[in-house]
Length: 270
Image 1 (cartoon, rainbow, N blue to C red):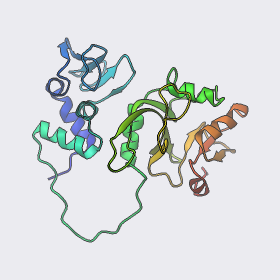
Image 2 (tube, one colour):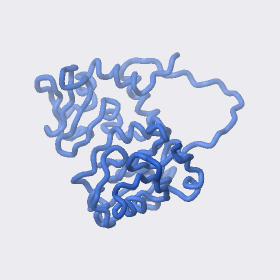
Image 3 (tube, rainbow, N blue to C red):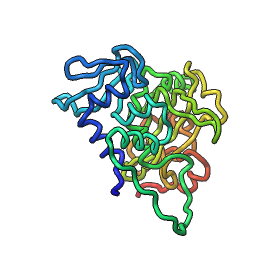
């Protein structure tokens, strides 16, 4: 059986968006061409709207929460309303709803184990960044200003997620915290990973968790970049460290490699 990727599953769900909403957002109701509900976790209310049919305003299945600025597709609705964490579980639930067969398990065979990213994959990193929103007016702005960073970067590299999953350990209950989401990119501008900094809801500091910073995806050789590299570029470790440098050198292109080891492996642009 061919494997249905995230994009195909989202498109199939969008073809029957109202049925998806009736199943997973049952606290809402249809009004015109939209499904209205309180939020993506199926809270009663009217601040979130899901487009049920394709229109000049956009494709079917896309949703926006006017109260929080969150947005996404119907796979995100399934994940949040069902309280799922792993994408495999989200995809399995979507396939069950669509009455699609589940992928056959691969036969056992010897495999070469290769190093993996700390968590997630490049595709998961791209989805997380796409789901996030600009940082203006959010706790990310508060956090950066507390660090003395008043010149805020644009949304190309840094965004905000209001309820980013944090897994303390293999057996611990998954939590959600506000987070600063940074795009890790290669020299061609392609997102290869993401860096998450979980924040206290007040924005005055990082979240009170054991490891408030984690990266996902392919990091080696890549970095979080601000500005377009020319003949000169400044490279370093932390995002806040490099943004502080940019306060006194506002035109300087910078690249945050996220750790000393990754800084040593950073591939400078030609």
